[in-house]
Image (cartoon, rainbow, N blue to C red):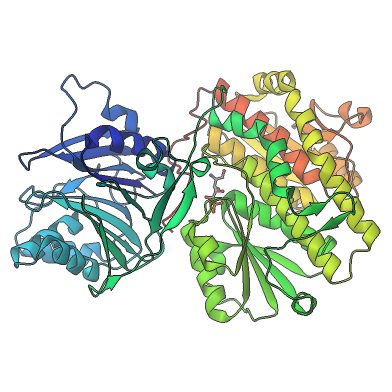
Length: 620
Ligand code: AGP
């Protein structure tokens, strides 16, 4: 979490850093700050509690001037969101400024030692030890770069750090430790920029050019960025030759496209997201699926004994749906697990286990750590990911990109649909290769997927219904989401969307579990959203709905269009078009996203940046 930007060059640093921070706000927005060094070698520091825009608002004085600086947008870990805890942090002498993303795991021990040595602290953050460690190195006669490297060697934990020092003006030192915090470095025409992610470096590599070159720091690497160029070193100080990567502007373009919120825009993009995920992977004429990205031979695919799907949050829910797809389409035993649990239970993995990690960002700390464990144990590892060049894509043997385009809304929507699309392709591809799916069955999958964008479009068009339902339900403080089979994870996802964006307490439950406890909650104050499309478990779901109604519960049921019988038994209805079981989860999640969005609007919530959250969770 947290976003870092640093700039050194010949332009004013403030606006470039400010713009970069705005682009990184998806990583956290508890507070923000920028430090610029002026031509006299003095720091000008500006901070704000809350979002990045606060740095520009309510300040009558001119923006700080200077051609080198660094900035930060924070997702609080150590110390509450406050002015004092906002980055950049400075040392006792006020010569070193630091921004930081991640956690210094041994900060208490370091802080005690630094306090004993006479350093004084101004914040409750773990970050501040970094400033004093650099100061300590400088006091011992090290150069800035060496003091910075020395500091890196004293820290435990995964993190990314950027620092500047007024006595050696014109230099930014950047470090990545472990896998929690990414760092991108770009340099051209006498200007250098660093950022936590690609959008932050856009100001430097756009300017009429179609593409730019960047370097991604790996764990244990540092960069010293000056106007003259970039020196890369490892933690021992050895020089490194970093490979530069081409990136297109498309990877970085962010715009609401006329919609009121990114979340709305991204929900509306879902038909396109499915199409993009299918592109070049499906032969619609022949009715076949090909995933050329996968490195497995036919024999290896046949030898896989199970598939393990891992992810966090919405990506975990995609994994749980994916489990059904692997079993039904691929004919292979599958399990889905939270990456944060998987990584700590010494899982049994061998080379006949195919592990599929699912991640929008590819930077989620728990998912990345779980992937490392799989790689160490010799499992076969692929990832379904949206962000090019992210850590997941670098750790996996192969990546099935979702190609959804940038997702800015903190609540994942289009990337969930894309992940489900890719998972259905993967399931069917394995099924083809293992001889489990007949050519006719594969053709049916292909035809279903071809229909999917149109059907999602039909759901999205019914805006008036979601607005009306939101009016009826926005004052409820408790929601229960129920579903069975492949819709059980959709119930979890519906509950997650609602709680994330509207702050309503919502629980997702497999409907069969309701009578084992949650039924005690049912009364007039609890709304139940039941997923009851016409599928093989329809009758069971109807029973659950009637059980809720028998206890005076209020039921909003999601059903197949034309199901008047069920509509007459419940308080309100949401509809999806008639579809096969494969498509149902891709369709049924859409009304739940839209309902959550409209309820959040009526509750005056910040749908794109809900409180306490961050788009990319790079701490565990
Ligand atoms: C989704 O709405 C959430 N904001 C969150 O649960 C997210 O899905 C999770 O943090 C995982 O992110 P990833 O897909 O980038 O790994």
